[in-house]
Structures are given as structure tokens and as C-alpha cells.
Image (cartoon, rainbow, N blue to C red):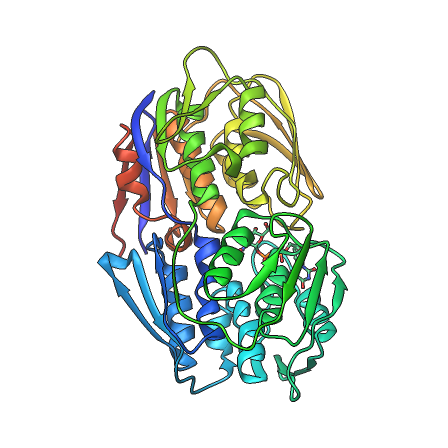
Length: 422
Ligand code: UD1
């Protein structure tokens, strides 16, 4: 298995291009199932999660071609041959559950494996099921699979979610585009990836308003048509690389970055003493003098501080002046990076969903292990700031969500290389 070797070597400078959003692409791809006509996505990120979604869509009979070195995905769901999302694929990636709403809407039936537990928490599907049932679906759990059907078609309804789940919002909105009548989804998630999905669905002929607010209204239509859509910038990749100059010092411009995607995160960096400015081409991040100040963080649904940047922020706080408290409110088991950071000399105490980090002057390089996607990149960031060498193993987690991580960080002067495993 491959690993990444990082050697701490001071300030960074230059530019890093930010890719299209993994999480947007993973919901835009299943949207192809809603129409017989082709859907083309541009600015797609080159990631193993995208390959997994490709494999899943192909297993349902969709055609998916990866063009221009993977940056363009040309999809067609003219002839679907299956309505079953198999456990062997779903278990690799929870976002596979995003085929449920579209298949149910287009085919009147769908069988989707439950994803099972994942490293960062239980992540059930109850909110997806409740929303689709409100639209008239009948859903049973049998042999680990959700069996959903809507023999007479889906019908619009008013539904309030108990929690603003990102995936449930996406599934319900996609299903409602082809339902009869109007759906009003209350307490909907407001993430930029949902806004991006709605913009794409609208190009396909869907009638939707309110995206980006907590009430989304969908007027069902008889059919959707083909479209071409550019995937929104990845705000999590953006935030991750904003932390590189924050943790190492220096000045880096993140090409394609926009402040509206990372407002609450940038506010925390500002409080920590990092300069963030919007430029014509992206966001410029600089730390010129002195140590970073500690700040407290609470993860929340958008527009709050994203849970997907909590691990990376913890890496920064490990070297900050003072003590910071990081509270994880979205997932119940998302501090697995903490013991690995402690191996690098960090001072962290975890009690339930709260981590208290007292900054140290300098971290020390060590062999560490990636436990999930965001944890793995937090260890790379910590390695960039540490004295000596850090080897991060199990980097297949990283390949799920970060394209060309070595090339991007090398480009701004980091000492980093991928070591091929046997
Ligand atoms: C998406 C993102 C993920 C991010 C998360 C929160 C994708 C592909 N993934 O995941 O990177 O970390 O949003 O911003 O977009 N929950 C339930 N019942 C449900 C659904 C969710 O209890 O039916 C709970 C989950 O266990 C979790 C919380 O709600 O504790 C948030 O989950 P959700 O917003 O659904 O996240 P995902 O869509 O899975």
C-alpha cells in the first residue's frame, strides 16, 4: 500500500488550482438517472469516489464516459437495465445512496443496499426514507437492502426534515422533480453542493426555487431533458489548502476559490491571525509573522463551520498559541486523527464530541496512519509543519477526495512524495 512522506521545510508560496467538488459531483452524477437524454459534467474531479459512482451507474445500465483526462463526464441513462444498487459497491461509499431518489422517480422502483457503519459514525438512512415516504413511496428493509416502490408514481407533499441532512435533501429534491404536483421541503440542507445540484436540475428542465435557503419548493414535471453543467469548486479542498500556508507560513493563492464557499471557515482563520483576501482568480491566504492564535470551533450544517474541515483545523490548532476547543456536532466518531496527531507531539484531550487542543511550539515527524479521508489530509498538513519526516500510511483514503495532492503541494514548495507500496 502506498504512503506519503512529508518533510517539514518552512514557508510556502505560489498557486494551487482547486478542483470541482467531489460532493457536488457525487450528487450530480446520479441526476443522470432522471432523464433519458445525456447529461455532461465538466470540471469533474479525478478521484476514486468518482470511479465508484461511475461503476455504480454503469451497473444500473447507464453509460458513463470519462473524457479529457477525467475532467468531463459524459453520461446517458437512456436504457436502464437494473434498479438495484448492490452492497458490493454501496459499502465502498455511502454517497451511493444518492441513486435511490432518482431511480424511484424515473422507474417507480429502487433497491438500494444500506451503506452500513462507516469509520466516522453510524450514518443511518431514516431521513431519506421519511422524505421519500412523504412523497408516496413504500419502503421496506429486507436483507440489508431498502426496497422502495411507487407504483402509481410519486406525489408532491409538504415535508419537514428532522435534521438538515445533505444527502436526504439531495435524494428528496431529485425524486420530487418528477413527482406529480408541488413538494415543499422544509428544514432542507443549504450546502453549496445542493445549490449546484438544483442549478443542474433546472438546466434539465426541473422547476425548483429556494435552494440555498432552508425551504426548497419543487414543482414536478413530466420529464427532464439533457444538459451540460460545470461542477462547483470544491470548498473542502479549498479550505484544506488554505490551511497549508496557515500552518507553514508563507502566501498561497487558491485558484478558483470564492469567499462565499468558505465564509465561516475564513472567519475562524481571520480570528487565528491568518490573512484571507479574495482576488480576481481566487483566494489569497497569508501568514507572515508569529504563531497562530487558538480559536474555538463548533461544526454545524452550512453556513456553519464544516465538519469536513474539522480534522484539518485541528492540525492547525496543534501549533497555535493557547488552548482551543473543537466541538464535533455532525458525526459522533470524528476524532480518529487526534491520537495520530498526539504521536507527532500534539497535546489533545478528547471527551465525547469535544477535543481540547493546547498548542505546542513545534510538532515532530512520526509514522502515522490515515483513518478516513479528511483525517488523512490533516496528518499531511501536520507533517508540513513538523520537524523531520512524517510518513502517512493508508493513503487510499486520500485518493477518494484529493486529486494530485503531491503535485499541488510540491508546486508551492512543500517537500512531499508518494512512496509506492508492494
Ligand atoms: C455529506 C457529505 C459529507 C459531509 C456531510 C456533512 C457527500 C457525498 N458527503 O454526507 O462529506 O461530511 O454531508 O456535511 O455529500 N443522518 C441521519 N439520518 C439520515 C441521514 C443522516 O441520522 O437519514 C445523520 C448522519 O448520521 C450524520 C448527520 O445526519 O450524523 C449528517 O449527515 P448528512 O448531512 O446526511 O451527511 P451525508 O449526506 O451522508
